[in-house]
Length: 333
Ligand SMILES: [Zn+2]
Image 1 (cartoon, rainbow, N blue to C red):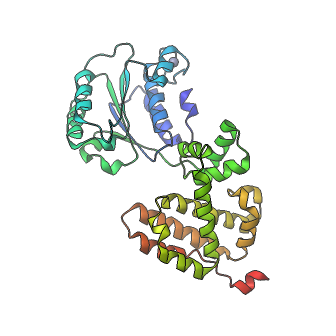
Image 2 (cartoon, rainbow, N blue to C red):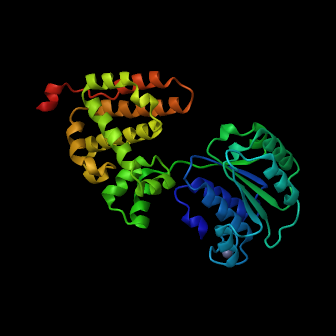
Image 3 (tube, rainbow, N blue to C red):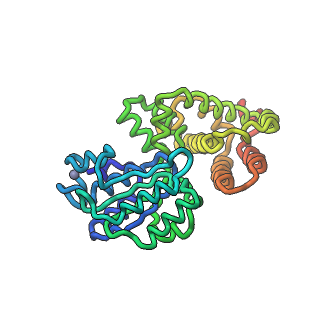
């Protein structure tokens, strides 16, 4: 049952369930993907699947073993997390000392190493030796949002399982279902959450959503008036913004909404449910071709900024490609 609760990670879940079904779970997996998309939940479900006495390979989720695993109080399933800023050599040494013993209660010992990229160099080297002589009963689940921060020699000894950002529609529906939000508010938060369920839940109970939202709506208004956008760019506000990735993701959904509106006219398909009137007005300023090009430009910019590109340069080019292509006079008609 616990696997069924994991949202939007079908690839990862199917891959693990197939291996479980064949009784072929390896000794080390690397769960790689953004924060808040279900890596920990999946790790716990796998630990349950390997130890649940009631049901296999799909764990029951309700027996004492499953419940203790979920609560972090089962002796054969342990979590290793950064102590302060990093995972230290002492933590890995302690793990090495006990990983070679038989499980106390269950069938497999499972070590869930969160933020695995935060191992110190010494800790990483010590962990590598453990992977080179894998203990018979142990399974290591390394969780990371920054795969590039891990030693390539560690990665090559793990089976890599990719996790992906969740779609805004999935997040919106879950917010409605589980937190009882209205469709309008759920839609807005889903846009702001940038693919992370944890982020969405956090936003549902904070003010951050409001300020991020205002920032994006300001930007959208400035784009409507090309000169203003240029002036604003000079201030370099966006360049310095820590929330730049979220802002770009929201812009992408804004332009996606404009395109949906232009092509279908169906307002219930929009994510930005609180801005339907504004979207309907702005859509008039863009041709279909321009909107498609804008979405392409946003995707390119997101890719470039995820790498090491010059932020200012990328934004300069990007904002130029997001301006309306219908002259003001035509828009007023
Ligand atoms: Zn169980």
